[in-house]
Image (tube, rainbow, N blue to C red; front, top):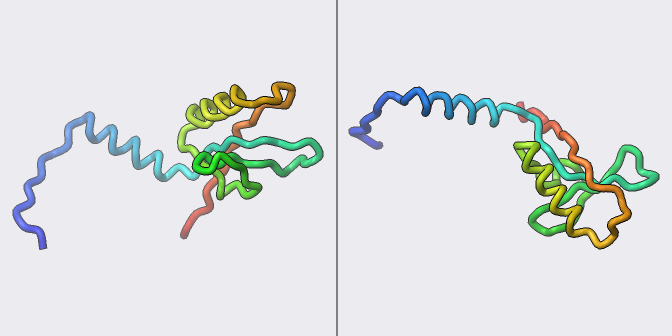
Length: 100
């Protein structure tokens, strides 16, 4: 058991940051980089950052909390492509299922 814990009240800035982080965690929306393939209207390939590969399962993809980060990754991938004539990757929103 831990004893003699001293706590101090949070500053206004700390409270605001804590509320922002809680709101971000509670938000089920995440963003992924998706390459749509011709002929596959509802399916796509979702980018995996760790293996520099793709998956067809959205929840296995690298999911970003912030859309701006997903856009930056998508733009970087488009810049690395050898086939410049292909369509750019799309940024798609994926809702995380509720664990309740």
